[in-house]
Length: 187
Image (cartoon, rainbow, N blue to C red):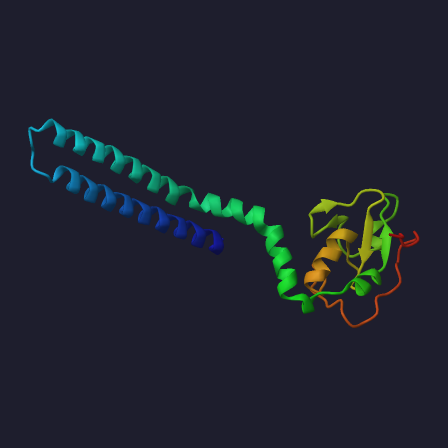
């Protein structure tokens, strides 16, 4: 609730700032355009009209850019997130697991017939990609008793060697054998 109130307050402050900038720019523009002495010369009147058109267009464009910049930033963040994760992987390579350690993590094939609560302490959903497990999904089982899609967990563990759910370290101690009745899947 406090977080929502803080976000609402920031939004109101930004709206107020946008309004002040709009009013200041409009006042300045109108002062510059209308502040000239009246003339009967048609060419001078045409220039003022042309200047007024460009000023109005610029003011509207500025207002649109300021208004939609947050939407643009959100879109760019969503589209660039995989690239940012890839860059982070190369900037901090020592924090994740190597390929040998990833292959040592026990793996099993998910089946709807299995009682999932016997295999893990979390629901039948991969918390990394937020997708429910379906038949024949390859799952990796960590020693903290959490399971994830094999591909999702491999990507996660190359960046950070902790369980995505409970943050227990995956480095160091040997992982237990798979607890599934199924044989570990061969990849």
